[in-house]
Length: 339
Image (cartoon, rainbow, N blue to C red; front, side, top):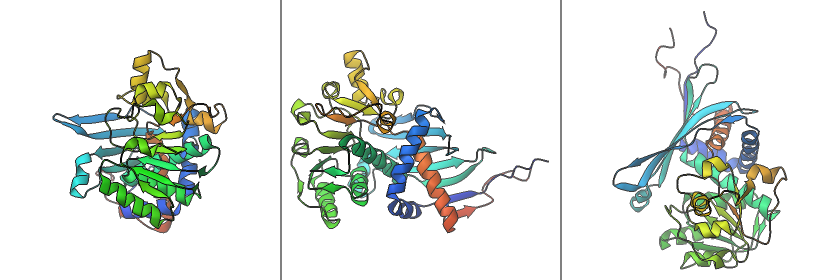
């Protein structure tokens, strides 16, 4: 008789996820740092993300990100995240997601977590980690945001909670009301010199850190003058910058094989140039000192968004919920556990 016991299932809601993320942003950045290093060492299995698209619905998609992260983590699972940009016009979030974690002893799923917040938090954490490494500290004279949705809000919260010294903000969104709401939140959190601007380019001027967090499907920023002052650019939405701008910048990513696909700006740049040596390194290279900031050029961090980051953060939240007695347990979720 086998001694293995299939786990029960625990369901963890958005409210529980938010509680632990907001209480542990520094922990979240450290988790992301350690997950990147484990992935760089080869302690992971990370298939390419699978994009489910729909005829006659070019903007909508659902993405599956399966993975395994070993080393200190030993966690496997999948994030299933949808992006429906039209939702925002109806007062609904653009993204919705679930994460399923699998027990490595039996393969049985043991947790289901609301994951749009995890996805936004790990994206913001990876960006803020890269920003600190490239800027050489937690200081920015001025931060520009192009796109002011959930990801931008998470980045700003990480900057605030990690004690970044920021003297001003420039904000642009195609939806002026969304930019105004974001400005109000920044001001309420102590931000000063917060200004909503009328065009995306104005969110670059005088900003030494620029966050691109849009839903753009193709490049819309083409003017080389945008990067002439050599800012740090967190290219979180991956498809904003024209390939010519990419080729003139110092480029960092998280995983070259993942990011050079799906019509990202880096993918377009590789096809335009017929080479990929414009990629200067990964964030693991930055962490471990193999690559340094080139201050003569803009430094552009374009993370594809590795599923192993979601797994690291999801596992951490599950562990915290277990210790706190939170989440809804469903012990009889699985069929045939008595066989």
